[in-house]
Image (tube, rainbow, N blue to C red):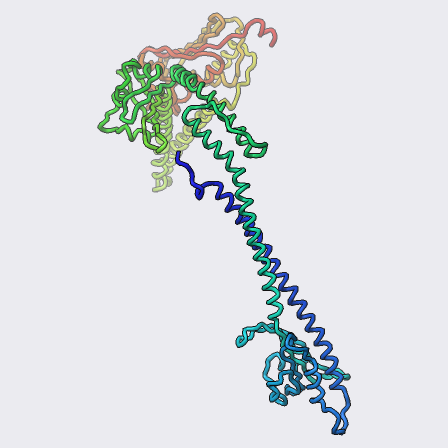
Length: 613
């Protein structure tokens, strides 16, 4: 590893940060100190000037209030005021550089400037003086003299006599240069102190930085040693601060890495064991698609020997056409279904693809996870068929209703013979759709277990007779109901309403498909711990290959006749769900032209349980 130079080292960064923090602190303190010192010196200067102004104002008021006579030896107002103004000068160091007295007509009556005595008696145009004379206000301001480059403090103060009448104004200019010279000297001393502080801080920063960077440099050298595989050395711990704790942590890391290296081989063996015992198949390949690893599950799913598959091309093993599918595009597909079916033996595999990348995100290989999804695809196919059947079954009555309603809309409603017949057809189709929707809702509730069964103790033969009696009262002429039921008592733990629905569906189908003059036979027999119930008709029957399909949803043997009779194709599917929810079984026996028998079983209650109930 390349050695880090001083100008790129963390030591220099610590020094720079230390100095910058101190410099910022000095700048903030200096700015605040300079501003406050300027304000304090300026306020002190203005207070000093105001005190002198008050004394001058008192002397001038006495001069203005003094009564004058015609004595030629007596000083006039202008002479007395000029004397007061001139005696105010204390020397060249006096901050007041100009002093003038102006009367009520804005004429200068006295000035402290000997070189400019000719302005006496003339009106002044100074804006500050004019405002003070006009409004009798005391005004002050700070000005900058562009000619001399000096900063001045100017002030205009009104003068009142004993009657509080405004008789004149006193105007003065005072130089602020002494104030700012003092401030500049103090700032210079502050800057010199700051430079000295920075120099001392830089030296201290070097010492502090070395105490921080020395253990870090030792840890860097130790890290280089560890990178070469040598874990025998440790870093010196110089204290209990954060860096000392870092050194202790680094030594602990050294121990842990040494231990982790010893565990790497063990983890590799564990990974091999996991891959061998996974239920899903895993295939690893290089970037060209050649197999480098395959577990037993993958070998069983695709029917190859893992040892023989080493080096084989993945696309060939998965039976994918490399002309239509590129191996580099497989990870983008997410997952695909591969058909390994042979003849009538359906076998589908889902393959998920992902890439193996190095540190630079370059692809170095592929991982393929395969699993058997044959059953899942069968369920999905049944779901699609169910949706298709529902759409078809609902479309037929809706189409019929639309045709008849359009005919009524176009004027058939006025025909007293045709209109009732059309409305009757629309009503029948509506009722059939309602029955179909209700049956679908019931199937959905049974699938989601929303309505649990309300079971109770029931003597089934008596219950069976009651159901048959209901149909016997409304049986179609020419159809005979024949009972072959035992005389004993057989108790069943069941939901009476749901079981009545089962028998209603079975008997209704038997009556629909029974020919005129046919017989429907009702039987019941005990078989070990179950009671077997059957309903036999003499209808047209069902071919052998279609008998098991009659319990599928929407399946009809004679679709045209069933729709004509108002069937939904869901009755036997509901019956199967209800019988199985009672822990029973239901099936059918039939021959074409010789009728159909629907049979189901229900578990009988034991003697012990029957007594408890």
